[in-house]
Amino acid sequence: MMEVYALVGPSGTGKSHQAMSVAFENGIDTLIDDGLLIRDGQRLAGSSAKGEKTTIGAVKRAVFVHEEHRAEVKKAIMEAETEKLMILGTSIKMTDRISDALAIPRPCRYFFIDEVSTPGEIATAMELRETYGMHVIPVPVVEVKEALQGYLMRPIRYLMQIKSGNKQGEKTIIQPKFSTIGKLVITNQALNQMVTFLSSGIRGVAQVTKVHVHVKKGNATVGMELSVRITESIPRITEDIGRLLQDRILVLCGINVEQVHVTVRNVVP
Image 1 (cartoon, helix red, strand yellow):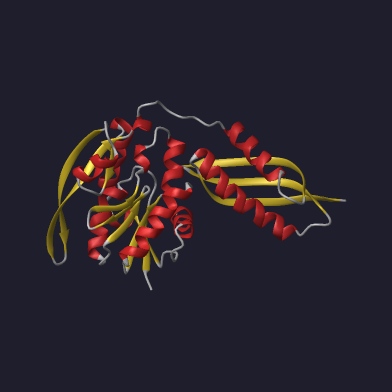
Image 2 (cartoon, rainbow, N blue to C red):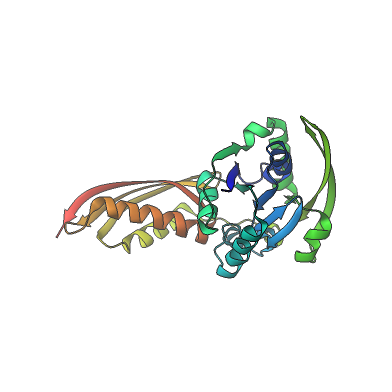
């Protein structure tokens, strides 16, 4: 049975930069990173989320929302017959969602970026992202150029310091289109309205009376109060709300919903 691992860290902290080192140290030859299936530094299937024109489009690509994209990568995983695979994601929930979308086991171990990178390396990666909009794809520049025409790209050589010796490889830095369109701001009011609208459509919800969404580093915690109908199961209602918000908020806004806290204030006929 295939073993699945995950490398987790906030966006811009250098996951793609560290991915090849972590994989090599742990005998992992296949990666899933931002919509790409990569083996030994070569793209096997998929298309990079960094090629999308908008941030929301990039998120959809990264979590395999599109059926054709999803089917292509699932087929390639089956044909590759890999024994160990690692998924890169901004949260545990995101990597689990990718596993489910591709019908592979959920990760048996999660590596966190602050375990494999120094604070200085993380700070440098974040500065490059915030100041210059630079992203890393762990495949050679020739591979990237096949799928991403017209982007600012340059290869970087790296020497991985590993227990068994050194391994040289190549990665590609690109500046995606969505980094040039300016900053996308979603207000708390808009998020609250979105949560209210989505939750109100759940069977058994009579009224959503209060919503608060707190977002930190791209991850959201949702708190809400509502009235429910006496004929419906309250545990089922809360589970349905949690699943719906985790799915739709990520797709619509590019924000991972980490927790959903529901308080039932009233029960009505």
